[in-house]
Image 1 (cartoon, one colour):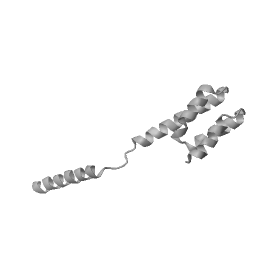
Image 2 (spheres, helix red, strand yellow):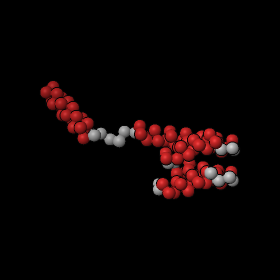
Image 3 (cartoon, helix red, strand yellow):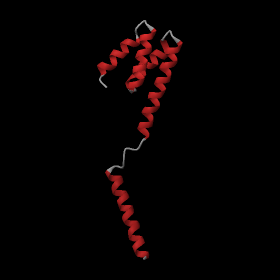
Image 4 (cartoon, one colour):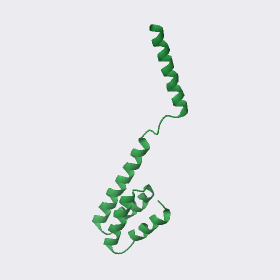
Amino acid sequence: MSNTHLKVWFQKLQNPDPSMRKSALENLEIMGEPETLTWLADVFLNDPEPALREQAQRIAKAIYYQQHQQAAIPKGATPAEQEQAASILEQARHRKAKRG
């Protein structure tokens, strides 16, 4: 996502019209960009509308947890891990062949 595109929504978060701020929050939720967490925290702490503060908190939590879930997903074995696994398998095959 381009930084310029995100800035448009950031500017809308500062609009005096609550419906514009709500729309900006909805769009930031759809985008799900971790770069928006600071902005969402600012809305949560400072927006005069309680419903928008709650919405910002909910969206920020969802983005935060999604980001951490993705980080926890293994990306696959490294070449060194693949070599080690192949070596272990080869040793196991060799032992099995010895036993008959």
